[in-house]
Image (cartoon, rainbow, N blue to C red; front, top):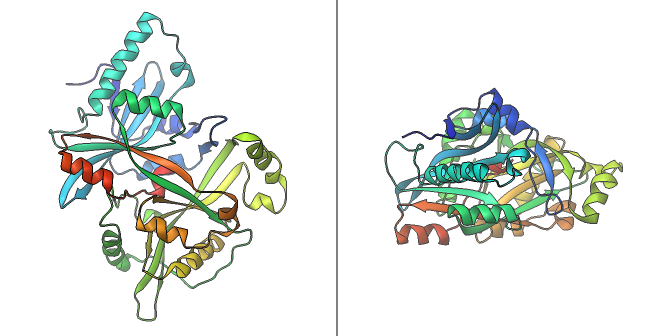
Length: 354
């Protein structure tokens, strides 16, 4: 049974690419307001996207569900990561006369069906939808309540960086012959995490490692250079940073409207190698001629503890970690499965948030 209003598209056509490239993210006055400038490239890398599109004469809004699988006590679970949720302002601000309200109710009904797996799955099977949201964003809270999502975990977004990063340690870039070895190490490292996926692993082959004299991998990081256009930062201090500090010759290495940084992903660290991890991060910043980096970690995970023990540079001293909520909606889950998901650390890929 197809939908009357929403249209499901399975690859990013030119209209979708253009729509998302123009998308402005954030809430003015509450959070950073920015635009991701690598959207076209990222859309080409999504392995199994389902774009639910609202169209009239042109595209008015869309939501992308990235279909993935993860394992829960050895059982494969179908999941959908909600990567984009974007609607044009003109559609969001329509007046609530009866005809518009009926249309909105019809759209909500179809979204409810989507979030139960209809039109996305060929057969009925346990599945889960999840997304990352700012807990202070009122619109996100309304969406959670409207569509039955629950907050199940919290993760921290760390900012790290140095004014003048330098190469501190020798490292190697991933080679094809090493990918199977690294994949196995990462699966073991994140074996207790829900939502672990290798969909974004080895993106552009930008994975880097440090080995010991016997060839054992001590630490590893995927480093994705990213570029955002920052339109606004909240508060008086945010305005000063964006419009004053960004024009000064030293501080503009850390913040400017054309913001370039490293998104760190798929961290691997042997116990006791936190200093090696710090040295690799600074060395990669120097390698890419960048000054700042971002990394994510579940707030109650072993990775979070590792990140608390490493040097965050001057950026980490200035900017505190930001808390982000993991929200989820499970379908056909047993109480045991649902409790397991809520009580286990969750995996976050920075690729998904950039």
